[in-house]
Length: 64
Image (cartoon, rainbow, N blue to C red; front, side, top):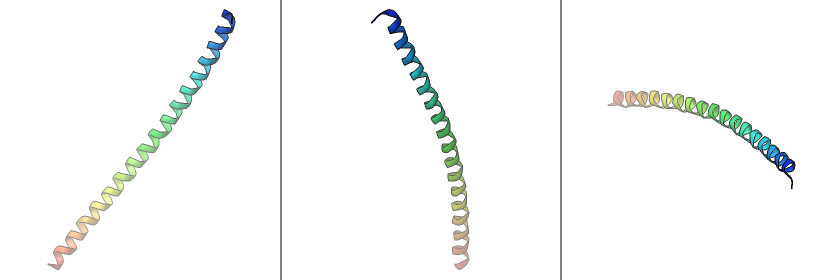
């Protein structure tokens, strides 16, 4: 294998690695959006649970 072939092979590998990093970066960006959506949904559910807990406590106190 001469130097030109080696350089060609290295160039191909570099291009493949570059594409892989670009895909991973896109995937990571997509996952960040999903995690943020899940966190927001979880916060909303927590808020609803707290409201219901207060309501149940008021109803139980009213029975006493």
